Length: 220
Length: 120
Image (cartoon, rainbow over all chains, first blue to last red; front, side, top):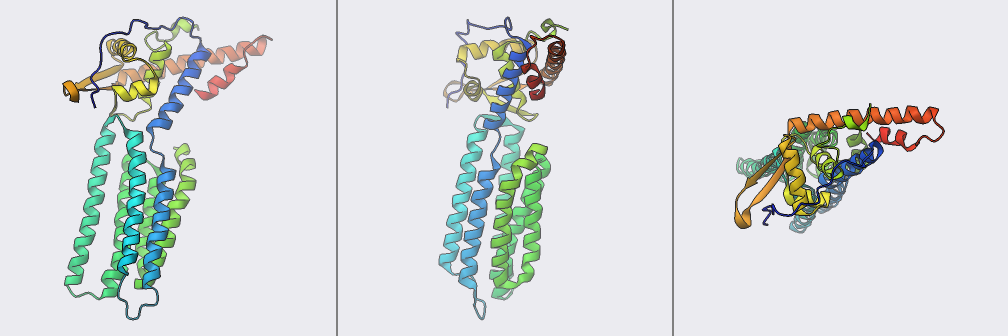
């Protein structure tokens, strides 16, 4: 997009004559509110999309593994449902973030790129490690149960928690710490139970933050 | 205290909007000219005129990158600009305080001044 500035025109330069204190205060309030509304990323919608994707995606996998004796792992259809739902949530988040940050450059843009790189690297590392654990002869219940369910949740939680330090965002910190607790605690629920724990505790954590987030952000 | 004490570089509706909008960005961030224009609602010519005035005072920094079709101008508030806005807000708050005090002793005072102080 060509954003080169046309330096012509601009003859009707206004000045402060006639602008009283109350008028100036009203302009400051209106312009400040508009800028905050338009330039800040709205987390509630992102968290609702994430919560629904987690609840239904992990829920679908739990549904496919419940009652397996011996444990075999998620059904391919359930994995596809999870991937589609997570993809849908990511698309919603990307759309909201790109609308709010359109035209915004500098430090925040660099921080966003580094966060995406860190998250993508973490997820790739989870998959590589999964292959390594499988290759080392671990049982299916460990590789395709406990590890496959808990490891991506742990990575997501750590990335959120680290990002919260950069952005000083308490909502993100709360969700990050909650996901770390869900991943590490949920792993004790076994290869079947861990999917149910991550579906319920992870999904509800997102939805809770969608409700509590705006109040926490206002207190910052 | 009078309105003459308000910084004349900022005390104009369009420039006040520009400075307040840029102040909503975190330190180290900038805004493209087109997005700023979209948020402020001025013609490109008027916006650049106001930006030049703010630039001359050292309150904003304009940077051009690329050229031709890929050319882009980004605008950011400088540290001086942020300090100037803080001083402007402080003077404005004092003026509105003064207006509230006057309203308390004058029957024809403007009660909306107290609401403006709260919003600042």
